[in-house]
Image 1 (cartoon, helix red, strand yellow):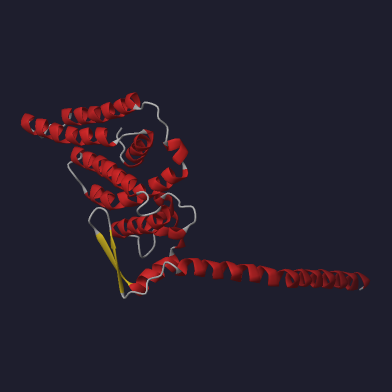
Image 2 (cartoon, one colour; image 1 turned 180 degrees about the vertical axis):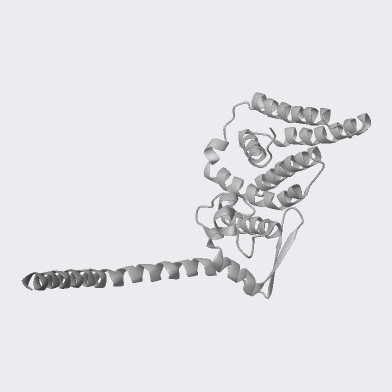
Length: 255
């Protein structure tokens, strides 16, 4: 009996101590969480629209249209678009985008366009307009090149929309490493190797194309090499070379 009484006293003391600790900590934790949620709402609200309908026009000629309330709901549910430090859009889509709103291929396209829309505002719409246009052109030519190699396909059509997200993330990288981007060393040898590798892919793919006639092969080769000529002109420094290679190797695999 004595042992039971001692055990009950110990248990009562432990419970009282736990409750005291919880009571002491709870107000601080609640206040921190409330403050965090409030700050988050305040940060998000500046991106809300008061329009009944909002239209997002893109650099590739496509547009997205949302009801105002739906657009504001997207902001509330996808605060990753508003991260102070932007993340790679591929990573964000894997973590947050594969939802009911953006789960389809078309939905994924919209996710990347929205990502570009918000990150562009952080980067500076006018400030980096020249770099943005060049990156979109480079990525578009790479996408078209590999589409031609494969005789087209839905993947390449979707990629054209997603290029906007990739370009905007590249602009963010450019803005954060601007000193490094001012490197003045000669990239001609590095670029020549990359351009040569693209031309080699074309030659190899045409050789194994047993359905095309010789004339068709010649026409295809000429068309695709024209795209590579454009890339050769557009890649003017180490930044554009690095981003072209990263986009190429990250999205188009050949074994």
